Image 1 (cartoon, rainbow, N blue to C red):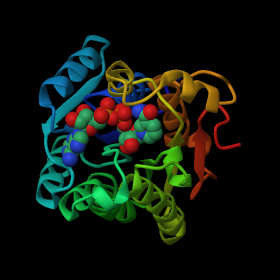
Image 2: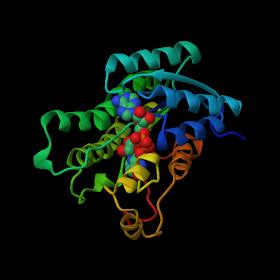
Image 3: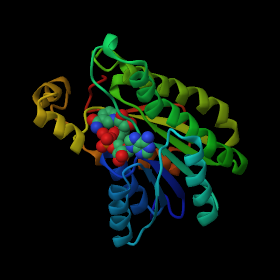
Image 4: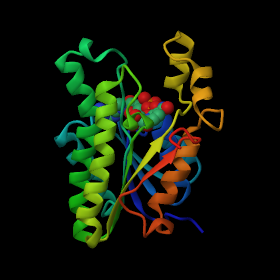
Length: 250
Ligand code: NAD
């Protein structure tokens, strides 16, 4: 039996990396998936992959730091499929450099991509979920939310705020049947991380050494956790931060 049969899901940044694995995994469990991404070509190839497997998927070219663009996407999802049951706030990104070298514009852009997008999408989808008295929101955080790793100050700040936002909104919405949880990935081997290894800005062996399981995670490891939290198997779980990090945070 599919865990998410006929649920309507909206995934931000579903065109690449972790968001791509999440989108495909949700569709395999029977959900209709809407993907919002700046990179529409990658998102379209994820849509094609989902459709080839018999799933349903819509793609939107949108910047999810922009309220009007999110309203447009979610509005179209509702017109097409009637509602939104699952929101995955996956979009995120960082710039690595010392805090004193960040310009205000760079600081704001990292906070916006990670945190403001999560607030805006949750507010817009949350209104629908609260009205129908059901829904699930999953925020993709990071082990950097724990702090303590230099050169990522706005990213660590935003991800730590996402953990707090998750607990706060979970309590605000719990009595209305809407759950919110965060998944906290460790080091996950995406194309972006692989590129950073190749250009020498990050060291793979160093990351593996810092992870008790001694290996990097895969996007599928995160997608499996997201499917569980989105499903009714997690019906009594809200406000939690689920670490999927090979023991990094233990
Ligand atoms: P990625 O860079 O591979 O993919 C991000 C996707 O988001 C891309 O398709 C990009 O086009 C899209 N995007 C970026 N800004 C956007 C915007 N404003 N509007 C719409 N789309 C936008 O990222 P990833 O490595 O798969 O990371 C996904 C999430 O997981 C992020 O929140 C990231 O912080 C988190 N994370 C990743 C890792 C890791 O090791 N890769 C570890 C911890 C947490």
